[in-house]
Length: 278
Ligand SMILES: Nc1nc2c(ncn2[C@@H]2O[C@H](COP(=O)(O)OP(=O)(O)O)[C@@H](O)[C@H]2O)c(=O)[nH]1
Ligand SMILES: [Mg+2]
Image 1 (spheres, rainbow, N blue to C red):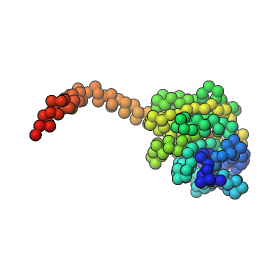
Image 2: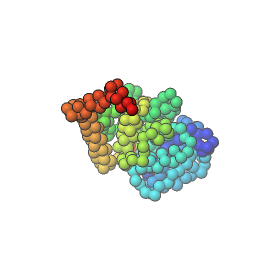
Image 3: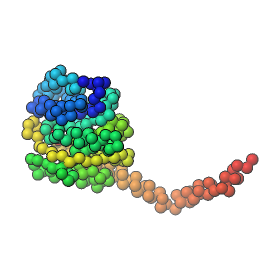
Image 4: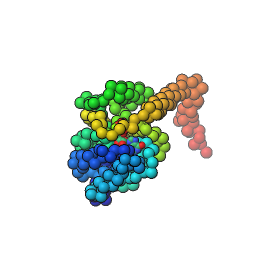
């Protein structure tokens, strides 16, 4: 069934070489949220994930596939999926990995959190009370925790798991955050979107999840992805600091005060009266 026949929610699953897991994940999503549509975004995986996705779509009208010509990163895959979703009448768009790390049974809670009256973005969080990580090597834990603390400090975003890839957006939130100029390719894409939602004063909530390390297939995490995230967060942090300092700095400059005072004087009743004289 497509959106035209009533699905309000689209669960997007990006894949690159996930032949061993994609079917299980899609079945898990269909069981957990039977009224949601699923969009698999495959970057021409050499292991045949795209063909498996096509078979799933052929047998289940709620499953659809977006094939892209080559691997160009998680961020680009999601941007293509968001553009696809926003051309259709979905009210909620969910992000979910294809490797079994994100628990499908938390989808109802994640989606409920962005229903009308709720938040604009809900994040399935490992690092809030009730959240946890199972079977993650110590190094990955530190990268995730350290990256999140660094992002919180530099960006002023009070979100414990800003890098998480299990999240639900309201469609109007995706429209509000100007996706056209998102340039992040790897996992800092998630931080970028979190920061954009936060900076527009929109509401973000975190839903605790148990995150499990994948048992099959291979992680696409690389040092390039970590470096991209670190350098972009540093740049955004410096931009933020610059904006804050220049705004405050302008207020402290004596010339600025004179100019401000002058413009205030010009708005006195006397001035108005004078201006209004024939
Ligand atoms: N379409 C697409 N999916 C990707 C790409 N890179 C990663 N993914 C998918 O994004 C999800 C998260 O990637 P994963 O390798 O599990 O990263 P990790 O969980 O950080 O180790 C998985 O479903 C991957 O198949 C990409 O370049 N294109
Ligand atoms: Mg993973």
